[in-house]
Image 1 (cartoon, one colour):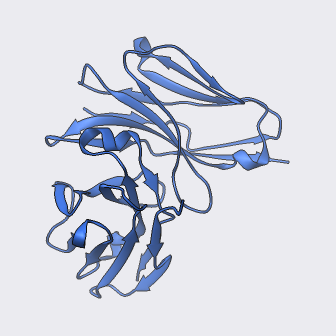
Image 2: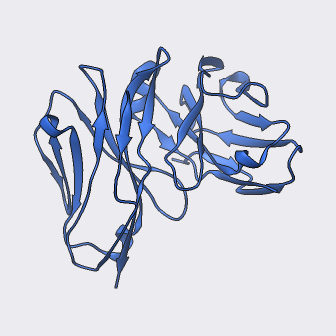
Image 3: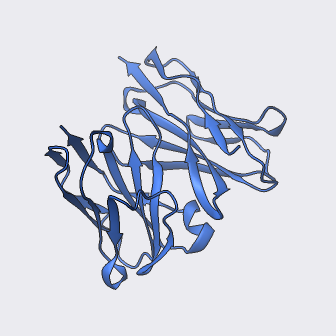
Length: 117
Length: 116
């Protein structure tokens, strides 16, 4: 079974530029998460999708971050415009379960490492 | 507060030594789950264990063991006879309700280096 795929693996941009990350979850997984992991810290949830609907985006900085999950499969996370403090690893995870039970069974991708100069 | 503290930022041991990673949590929930994840250099988080608050039995899986103590709000992780492949960053996490939604709250992580 293929794991969670993410691209690109690395991205370097200048502040105020835009950037987009892509995630392809494990086939059939209903729930998809995006996390931000700043260097030296644990991951922080940005947004949770169940199929193509948003379950929780309370920690997403909506003035600059946006995410979508078209057709309940792939997802993209966008930052526009980027700030220096957005430098982090962006992790995507998926789960075959829904609601709170999805947290018990998450499969993580390798992440996209973003550096904002 | 819903919080996880991993006080050990980095640990370095020689192969075959035993090592314990500490995790202390704070939660206002009466029912909760605790997790440990491993993050190797490749970047993805690998699930190791999940424990619910009703089950205080310690668990052993091969060289890995976990000691859950509600009285001290701790969920420590021990690797016996460590190996170089155990080198990674390890995260303890708490499933908590924050702003009305269930989330995983992660500790800061402990970077474990096993030297040959």
